[in-house]
Image (cartoon, rainbow, N blue to C red; front, side, top):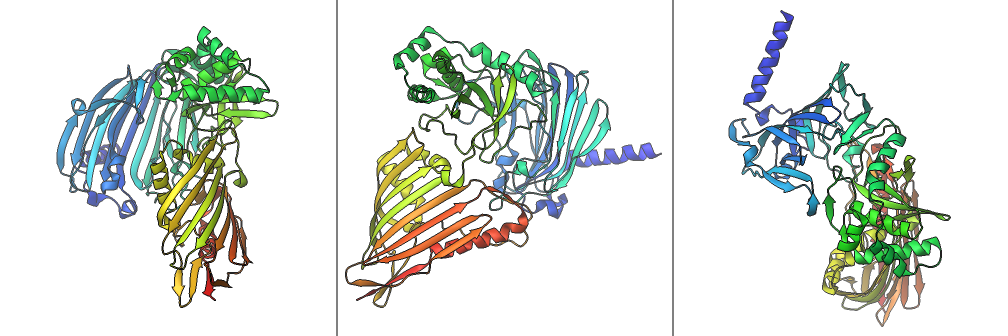
Length: 630
């Protein structure tokens, strides 16, 4: 009798879900902050043998508003040789009434890279669909058989903000006889947890009723908030190459043998190329000359061919054609160094704005970018090979402060990339401003950027003069320039410093108060509005440490005297420090301002303390100087 009741209940639920998904059935707590609500997300992975996994997907998503369209995009990523079947898409309206159905023949086939692919075995089937009304629901299912078993996707509730979940289930069935390793990564903030059931060769992991993560100010990447379960086969296949994945050493040996060594090949052209450079000096001098030469003759273009898209292009092909992706350009640079007798190490890394490292205790295939490390007596040199403009031995904010998979003949070593301190991520700003009686100002300025602030200015390098000036107007919009001109722009690729000068005029900077003029002490400052939040539910992250150091000199109009200047201020907290001071000097007011911010993830209970710290800084930046007509 119990079995009959259970089966009956399951059948009733299946009929409900098969027929209708009314938006009114979504619990209120899952509607809060949600652009989309995942009604169900059912995945099954059946591992049949070392070179065959069959995945079944069925995902039902209700799109609450226009912002949710992209989160419910209908697509199937695949590699050439994968078998895709059972493709079905059904669209429902707000009431749960069926609107339209689609099949595989309605999909379009593209190369799977948004930046434009030259060569690729990675493909994606896409169904373009736009709804004229909200909410609507997408029921999407398909089955795919994959010969590559080195990648088994981790199971998390979702990956983006403003997404909530009713139920997700991942069933993994291992019929291969190969050990399947799993690791559960709980949420550090108790946001959700996976329930495990089953035993032996069949396990089920489930999430239920997970509310949306609001895209709040300074929110850490959701991957740092949510739980996940990761999987890895002890033996695997990648594009016909079989290997062992039980520890970093064995896996690293396979990677080196299959991904690095086969393309570690020089050529007469490369030999002649290196010989023509006539390298001299220290190892660092030679590496720099080779690196900047490589930058001058290559450009980045995505390539995803060979051993599942992980095998780099042959260095001679990059040498002849002058292009490659991160793998090909890194391997080409490695070949140049080899020819010069300088050893280097090919490294795989997670490139992301917020640092993500590999787990030393759970070896698995991963990463999305390749860089090069050159060991020297003075320390490691790190080379980002995809940019023609980035400085020598400088890693950007998307690759600093995390570990890499360094591929050596003896296996993989996990090595940390550099961490830049606040004083290394520096902006130096020097302004000389003439105050005019009509409330306008004219001035000149000198700007210098290092570290992550160097990175944020690299986008200026390839702009023409007008585009540079327009960029300044947007960046320093607080000044509302009447005119501004950038001059003497320089990207120092030896020292990782960007500098430029500006010449500007802006109206209505000061305000008249009788026979006096009133103006703010710091002309250029962050105008961010900071609000306290008593109901903050999650931690906040300061992504980068940095230092801003300003020297500002105001020259008074003729016939005016300094009447009142603000008091000096010095603020310190665990989040950083701020100092501003004022000096009267005849017909000039000099302002010295410095702020340092400390990166880190801070508990939600300290959020309002941080807001208070930033508000105090804003108030001091906006403090006023009073000058009076004599």
